[in-house]
Amino acid sequence: SGVCHSVPVSEIISVREEEEENGSRQRDDGSWKKIREREGKDCRQAFTVLYVERCRQHRWRCAEVTFTCSDEAFLLLLLLLFVSTASRPKHLLVYINPYGGKRQGKRIYEQKVAPLFTQAGISTSVIVTEYANHARDHLKMEAELKKFDGVVCVGGDGMFSEIIHGLIWRTQIDCGVDPNSPEEALSPCSLRIGIIPAGSTDCICFASVGTNDPVTSALHIIVGDSQPLDVCSVHHNNMFLRYSVSLLGYGFYGDVLSDSERKRWMGPARYDFSGLKMFLTHHYYEGTVSYLPAKGIIGTPRDATRCRSGQICLFSFVFHPESSGEWRTIRGKFLAINAASMSCACPRSPKGLSPAAHLADGTTDLILVRKCSRFNFLRHLLRHTSKDDQFDLTFIEVHRVRRFRFMPRHCQSDSDLELDLHENSKRQIFSQICKDHPACGCAPAYSSWNCDGEILTHTGIDVRVHGQLIKLFARGIEELPVFEDLSNPCAI
Ligand SMILES: CCCCCCCCCCCCC/C=C/[C@@H](O)[C@H](CO)NC(=O)CCCCCCCCCCCCCCC
Ligand SMILES: Nc1ncnc2c1ncn2[C@@H]1O[C@H](COP(=O)(O)OP(=O)(O)OP(=O)(O)O)[C@@H](O)[C@H]1O
Ligand SMILES: [Ca+2]
Image (tube, rainbow, N blue to C red; front, side):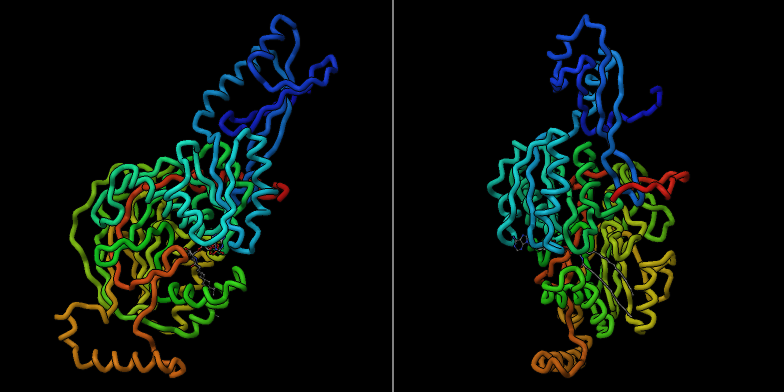
């Protein structure tokens, strides 16, 4: 009817030929042979295009529009599609955690994601996990990775952590790199990972896509997006412990996690319950943090700029030199020590723990919250949910780093201990008594590390950022056009 509609070829999900004008109901599959058969006939081609439509808050939906054109133009479109979709996945290995978040992983995948994959002509091999670490071990030892163009993780941050542990490990073994050594340069993983959010925090999905919406994630996988991601390796005395891509948190977030693990039955609300409890408990921990500041990078953790799709993050990593600068050391009493390798934006805090952190710049933002009053800590926490700067407080300091170490006070070297031997021995006896009498209410000596939602077994750690070690089926958060129509009533 002469209405004009344009769709970028890169955002087409599928093309369906419509029935021919003579009424025959035979459906074409768009193959070259069928099209050649019609050559010479003077008929116009009607076809329906399924494409990506942008909705509010970075959500994507599937929309469709029907075009008509000459056979030659249609042929040209198919050719264009063929060329521009070379980076799209055709075979995917899917892992579903049926127990993540509100236990909806299987339903979300079957109802919202699988039909889209079928429509886009993607074939899948689906594994519903039967126990914790099933996906990790399958990837490490069994999975025939050559058969696939990507891995899909249906679950939360913990499930994603399983997937990267399996994939990074497997890649190092295949490339002859020792994954245990803290000094080795790790080999990047070639398979991309897609995250279908079905967990409790889903911050890796939220911070790399802009929303935690299964359909949006499925569409980013279908169009073959690619977003590199930094990975931290965590070691204790040269022994490998874990990888982290979002939050490594000691003190407050470590305690929230330890407390919340016992309340898994509560679902995602366990974090709010334990968060309130740990806020009231108000423990602080003593220790030494040393770090290697990042040099030659674009930006600081206090910037107003944000990590956005196709912007500075990608080339800032490529152009800055590996810094061999001076280590700096800070000793003190901390309510929290957090390292955020990405913003850690999530529905609880849409700007995240470190709003200016980058997904792929080869650095992590080290946030130190020194001992302060409950009132001041609350001010800091509240600012995670407002426009105010959560770092603009006297008891907070933040550094962009490439590497850092933490040593809790009671693990410090002998010479350090000799300095305050007397006080220290009193404390050790005291903390022993407190373990026996947990009701006495005095502060414990140690917290634990929250490593992407998993508890670490050691408190003294050495952390190193491996820039762009893995890739996601994502493109980073897209800058919203200023003219965005916020009243767009996109069905959700
Ligand atoms: C007063 C409101 C303050 C709201 C402050 C919100 C800050 C939230 C920042 C969230 C950062 C999440 C980082 C992501 C970590 C993930 O790798 C990990 C695995 O999924 N998730 C958690 O550890 C889950 C961590 C969840 C932590 C929730 C903390 C909730 C704090 C509540 C404090 C209440 C004080 C109220 C006083 C009246
Ligand atoms: N079949 C299974 N049975 C029990 N646990 C599993 C199974 N599959 C995976 N897991 C484990 O479940 C844990 C939690 O999973 P997941 O991260 O998906 O959800 P969550 O913890 O609710 O969300 P988030 O990590 O976003 O806070 C992970 O540590 C994972 O190892
Ligand atoms: Ca980073």
